[in-house]
Amino acid sequence: MRFELYRDAQGHWRWRLRVPNGNVIADSAEGYARREDCEHGIALVKGCAAASTVDMTTKIA
Image (cartoon, rainbow, N blue to C red):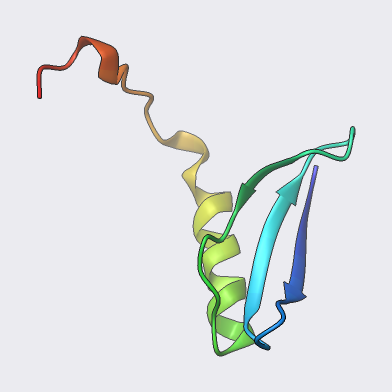
């Protein structure tokens, strides 16, 4: 897997997470004005390895 850092058509910084078969499995969903902020977003995702999984189909709204 790899994170790709790039600029969109409006010049905003974005990231996407691509797996070896070429598919994108996650993206920033928003553009960042500063590259540093985009890199911080990548770091946050990298740090979420210990995040729990919640089955929302068993939750009552």
